[in-house]
Length: 105
Image (cartoon, rainbow, N blue to C red; front, side):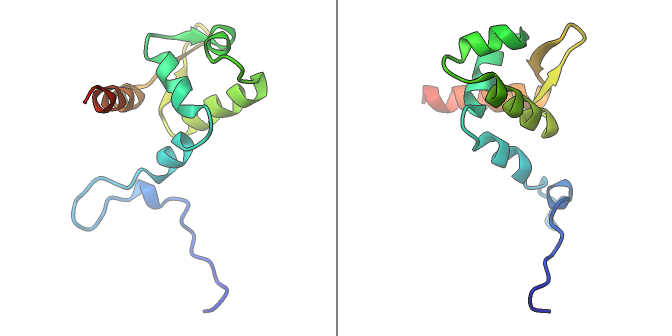
């Protein structure tokens, strides 16, 4: 019907009919946010506390950093460890490795 919206909130959790991995739409949306790639890049060297991460991200405000970390955590790219430091998940490590490879070419 005209005007109805389809619920797409869980589409990226469903593999395609051709057996391909699910479209990582939420992760790509998170990556498109300002500062998100920089946060991932800085975490590539290992876990960092919030203040140390902010210091490495130049002029980023604390509120923006908190929001980016929350968004990246929600899509499974970063996690807060037991010592209150942020680190890349295995998926985040793979993504940064791919970016690094692409930049080297």
